[in-house]
Image (cartoon, rainbow over all chains, first blue to last red; front, side, top):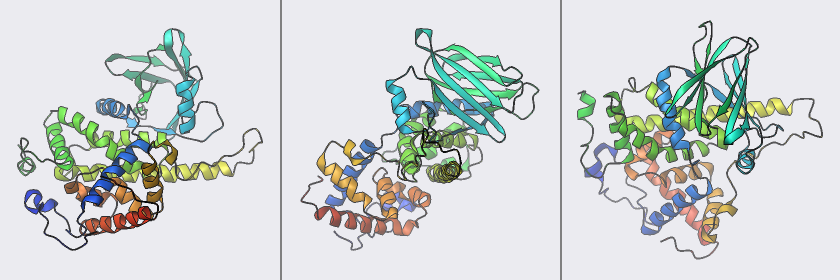
Length: 186
Length: 210
């Protein structure tokens, strides 16, 4: 391992991007780092559709809705998205209902996803504190679908195509501003 | 055309790094061209993902942190003062959100551990501190040895090596900010961490990495 300072041959090319030239790599170091990158990718792969969901989330950013946070509890509820193991189980057992909770300040929205006819998904939602809400379902390349909650904060979408989606929730009385869920995979 | 745009690298030039492309993407986004930003999302999401995961953020929470980092970028697109540092901005934003996610997760766990109704039907299972999968998922033996050897390094070395393995060298300045390591020491620290890693690996046999 060669730790002696060497002139940084990249200095000219990268200008102020250069750094302390100590710790130059030898060939074995370089190969080790390349292999490590491969191992990092293999052991903890980036979720396959994270890029697509991020891209859709960016297009929704213009809605000026505050992003809600998904709550991940290692709860004993079947099918909670929280545990990675449960997420994997969901892949192999899509018939299982799945519950996700989102929060923003004082508002909590819980949705339950269950199978509907034709391979579609039914979404049942509850918002707390209970209030009249307009709930918009946003999906890539599809018109926005809007539903209104009842006075207890319950709402549903009966039959939704699987795929990426985000819910945007506004109070019917216009108070409090809009909030949106992260883009999830139905 | 803004002054900062003139300071950006030549768009048609070769040898652009991820940091350069990030700077161009933000500048073009501000000018109403969203194509380059889409390319940046595709290219930089893995680096953000592993930055967040290196903080010990659970799988699904990490997914949300990466998404919200991209949303934050477009929301702050007009106010980021230094487009050339946008990759650094992304990494620092992701890392802060990762810390917040870890803190919340620990608080939740603590609250749940204190719940009195922890019944035998619902035993309290505290998740492992490190949410990363086991080395068993790796197909090649030398990769399993490399991964388990990496775990034996100090935490700072692990984080540094995981991230620099994914980045172009000129982008180290962005990474240095994200992991809170002075730019001037990242090269030598990387060297020391690699030397330690190779010492551990040498004790376990003769492997070729080329």
